[in-house]
Length: 322
Image 1 (cartoon, rainbow, N blue to C red):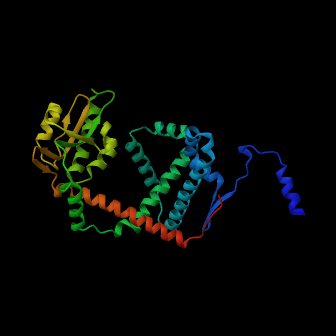
Image 2: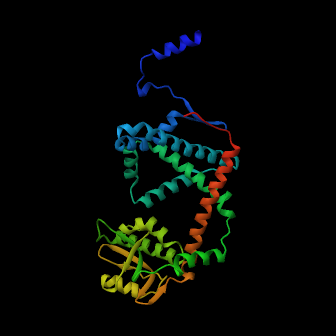
Image 3: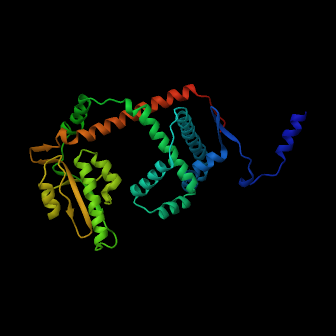
């Protein structure tokens, strides 16, 4: 009877506003807990977008599914953080600041612009830095527990090359990749131009050393093609501007062109293939061996990470109460 009275009492309580809802635990991960407020904080920007674009009749279902997915990712993060602590893997303030500066460079924005974007998406600087710290822990853990144990053989590299380059159909023309650096403002400022030219030479040196050209383009290039890894597609001879044509004609497939200076900045290219009628010239294996090894390590790491995380989940105490 006392239980029934208590239930009836709760049923007739006034409805609470969102701000008054009492926090509760939505998951237990070994000795850690994830609360509803943690989940709402983590998924806030996602939930906001869903509410803005989802039809009313689908909103509850879509939000519930998103909450489940985000909670699963939060459980994974908790497990990773716990394992890192067990292995005495940490992140220093210097490492955190270096990663922060790397984020600014990769996104080509200032610190003020980044924090403005965070604020507009409903995230605080503290949340951002904590997310960055967890990502660094995650990367360190993967390197020590997974990536360092992966061995890529010459046979693996040759098989990938044959499947993705040698035996793959080649489009007619010149297949070109690009990395470029543009001064949007103050294009005549000699100091800024000198700084930009130095960056162009630094990145080109990395490309010549065998670093993945597409990864370099996504990280450093300030051209629209950066989003596609610098891939400009295929050009015919008469479609290329004079300076670009001279640079491309000076190299063979797999080569990195000299740096071209333009009115607004600097750029250079990599040639992947040439097809002129029945004549086909492919990028040679030796010129992209490092890139292929990087790709294969990434693929193997992703596969082994999923298996590793699955094993950790199986041995952990996890209870979801969403």
